[in-house]
Amino acid sequence: MGLIVKFCVGILASILLWPPAQADEALSQKTMAQNADVNLGALGTALKPQGAVRGEFEQTRTLKALKRPLVSRGSFVFSPEQGLMWAQNQPFENLLILSETRMFSRDSEGLWQQTEVNAKAGPATLMPMLVKAMMGGDMATLEQHFSLALSSQENLWRLTLAPKDNDIKALFAAIELEGSFISDAGTAPSADTQASTGKASTDRLKLISPNGDVSDIRFSNQQSGPLSEQELLAFSPQIESGQ
Image 1: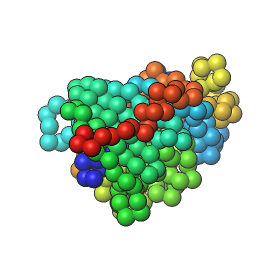
Image 2 (image 1 turned 45 degrees about the vertical axis):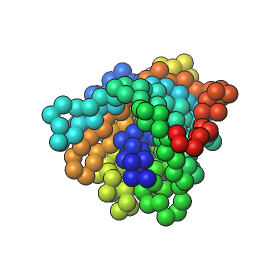
Image 3 (image 1 turned 120 degrees about the vertical axis):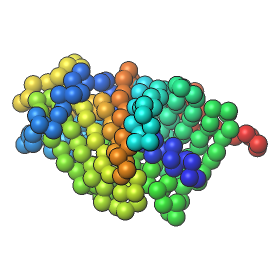
């Protein structure tokens, strides 16, 4: 179970949705400000996916013990009903399938590990819930476990999550989400209409560990729609004995 939990921590969500913003670094702490037109409820509604979402990710892990960051790339599929499928393909293959009741992982040699999630599983129990809440815009669930601080500038937003639970504090010092508000036409809305467009994107996820290690995940090429038959089957892998 320990390996699966570490893997979940490494990709937590993992993990979010929709087309990337063009100005990530514009979301600096110096320029972001509180905006009365944007609140957690409106952001949560705007972030809720319409059906399943699939896309690509690039994760950069900066570890204090290493001189160079570790970069990995791959693809993901998120379904509110089925869970998260996170497939790393560079620099080596790894697959994680995460639902509310089970976690599957497959390593680069094709070996599977399965874990049943139960109330006594500690951090392993929290992972499916956090993934679903973050990817589904469930602010009420997030507020149970984090102190949330939302700031915005023009059509850009940032949500900072400070953990309340000791189990989560042991994994993360903070989590940061960044994104943008988008109009129905896929363009950035004006400042006075951003809260009423009904859509928002999450383009970047930053996980900060208590020891200072940072995982920076950026998302691209996202598309939404019903799960294909192949995707639906992939969420329930048939693992033969000895695999």
